[in-house]
Length: 578
Ligand code: HC0
Ligand code: SF4
Image 1: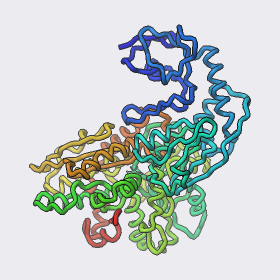
Image 2: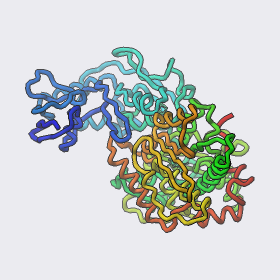
Image 3: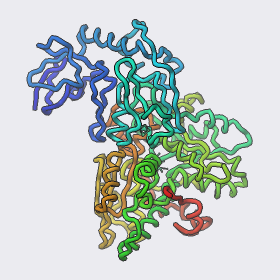
Image 4: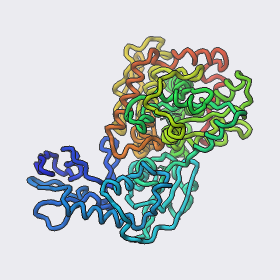
């Protein structure tokens, strides 16, 4: 190891470590705007462009950018001398010189890293007045680009190109004319962007944000002619509390109370639909697997999950020829919408057009998914409006609630009852673990000896496990982050995929790190705590296998018939290729 001194503290680090990381290891947080390093999730942006992280290194004349300075033995570093602070202030003043001065009305007000840094560095005047980039709004149903607010940190470029391997965004031009844009500056809607929202998740300012649908939700809630129901995705409950001092903890019971106070007529759970997805997708998996094991080589194996819309879009745009490997099961969001509009609304005697389904998702791609024309009937969408966790937090603020003091309440039934299997959907590996719990018991007709498949958990970008289905080894693959997913898909294309079933989530870490979640700001521990909170909620549930959900069983008895039966095919399945 290498020993050095930072602000009179001794750090011991591995060779090659930079000063930002070394300082962090002894509890010193050197400010950065461009640098971002999610170690375990494999996301690193270190172009060294913002220069905010400059420090003094003894024996060197010039200040050194901490992110680009590798530790050496005996180095003596100071991170907050007057010279350092002065330099940081000047650098920030220069960055602000071509940034619009409109924090009060900015969509990122209160959440912007540039704003926080100006506060922390005590910037009191806009010293230099440069020209701001022309306002340029470009939007899709999921993402809004406003390049006027871009500080050219390149985080979005790195995440889109290197992590997701999509390559929709890139900096073009030099010096003052540099701008972050799509190829030929085409509207983002017409590019190969898959709406994953990872660029939004890492943007330090509001150059990239979600396309907000708060207004539509408020209007629906205020309309006495509408019955408004809400479904909440698995990963929302472990992130929503962040805005209210309950970071990294599950706030399920407070969330349901808050939703009722906002005026939703029924508060339901996407986790219910996750259980339903497992019934359909698990059955589909067994049908394909049994044919395959019987020697049928026309059946498409591996079966790939299709519940993540960023991933589905990636397949459609980059690997359309492998579309048949995707499960035909709709995502839980859309299964929920289909059941709400086709089963619950008629049961309650309400016309589907007066029955508004709102979803709260950790995701911006879900907005685009909900808008797909095939997911509705006669122009009425199954899911009318999809908002993110961040948007829900805003609505809770509008409604003058002390969120942390709310009493806890349960979801409404019947579409609010879920098992632990539905809960873990929200983190990478959870969908396939849930599927294995059910598929194993249906296939072998035996009770699983142990429910926690720890071999499927964790944050490694690609994971695999072989599960013994009573003498039949079933090979499972998992990838999260589209760059990792690409590797598994390329194996399939080359005809050498060893797997029978693959789970893919577009966002590194899965939905806990979705593009619509409260910002992680580079805090990987926070993301891990969200995942742990989901596993803890699963472990505490009385029922932990989707097929044991009594309301799912009742739904099949009363309405659907059997999994993958004719009505299921009509309402709960689709095709993502043609
Ligand atoms: Fe997810 Fe989902 S688990 S994609 O990550 O499958 O967004 O949380 O809602 O639909 O359930 C997101 C999260 C969901 C869906 C579920 C799946
Ligand atoms: Fe790239 Fe995802 Fe952002 Fe689209 S939403 S530009 S695919 S990071």
